[in-house]
Image (cartoon, rainbow, N blue to C red; front, side, top):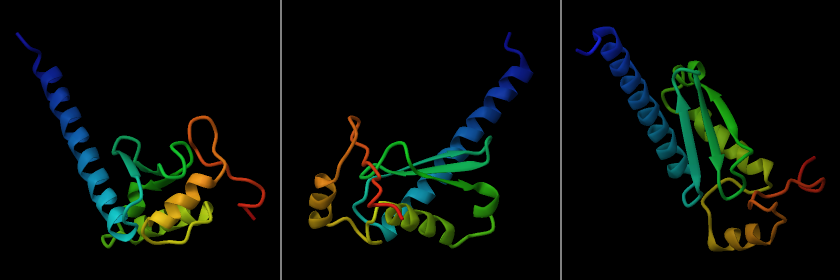
Length: 125
């Protein structure tokens, strides 16, 4: 017979995973709305209280971390829009959608063996 406490724990874990997925989807939708065409990835962790945002056009390693406690006070997702824009600016990319011209320019930038753009002295003040 299954232990009821163990079963309850499994249900709590499933609820947490669902919440993680819902939060990540909402944030990804916001990023795609403002910065169309970019390869955004979002990982939410209710247990850690943070959201990780990456733009795979730039790097799968360097990204932004947002605290859920801040996001709870921001129903219009302004912090998400700001974080996406700041990440783009870090790589000297104008805020906005990914155009073919921009993709060509990004393809010409130096990258490491994993394809992450390299931030050079010239690219960071």
